[in-house]
Image 1 (spheres, helix red, strand yellow):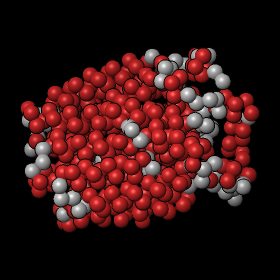
Image 2 (image 1 turned 180 degrees about the horizontal axis):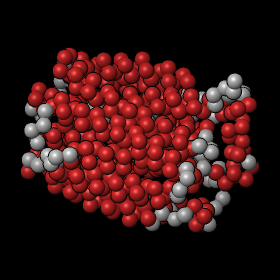
Image 3 (image 1 turned 45 degrees about the vertical axis):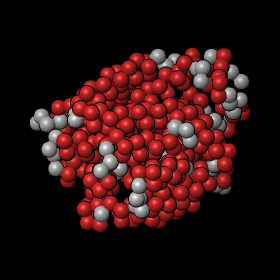
Image 4 (image 1 turned 180 degrees about the vertical axis):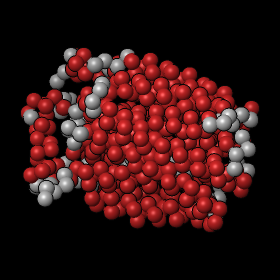
Length: 414
């Protein structure tokens, strides 16, 4: 019987890490906003700022993480990130002041930098050539499946309180994350098995290695139009996504929807994104990724708009289907597009820079949404504004050059 290609074990390990980190830190944070506000009397703006601090792992740290992962490999960064992230969650459970709250989230940001997309997607990119869209789609599905954790978090807060819940989640990070880090391998050459050689033999061509290993210069990359377009579009995507996942439960509570129903809807956002993550990733292996990504942004914009009318019959399902599939597809395609255009040898650096742009949106989105709600008591203006900005992202994606045009660009020559 032919053994399973080890690259798929890398995908599984990345899936598990993404599942737990996204569920406890990224999507699950919305369940803690009201309990924190009730206990400490903090405003939504003050609490939302923590989500911005959490975004440091995709902002100030992401380009740095990109350099580290290309130099030291995914395994070492993942192991370190798991340890720090677990400790950050435990510390958050002992919060006594706003300063301590922010400090714990800074620590969480450093830990998450070793556990999320830059590290896991780089590991997957190193192992796949022919099926990169499918492999990255499956990895990204871990973030979507994390929605299953949200109702559990809501239940745990109700039973044990938010402090004990955070401590349990921190310990769980160690229990789940450390074995996943052990599974990681940096490159196929570490596994002496013929199926591995068959899967990646096309990568070994000297001309391809020379092309992919071209000198990496940040100044040149930041001048390249296509890379800037996709990075700015990613900034808009994170602005909308972070605003929604951070404030979805407070928003639904303001619409007089029960906390349990709000928790289920918050869980539905990442869960329903699974079909978009894998489905659009699969389509990206067949059709031009630029076209599929444009379609995803259009679907996401319509979903964002429908959030304004969530109390209308059936509109909740319309929002979940459109918004979730849209942002899920982009999550996969952004990495697959970078892998296709720029190869694997500098992939971590490219993805790190792009996520740095995205973090700017991730910082602005939730904080601005909280500020608007504190001032006018409504989120509707925020959702409308974000819908319009996603329309701008569509224009940016349409300006991306084809791969053939990109390779002729002077900045991309060896």
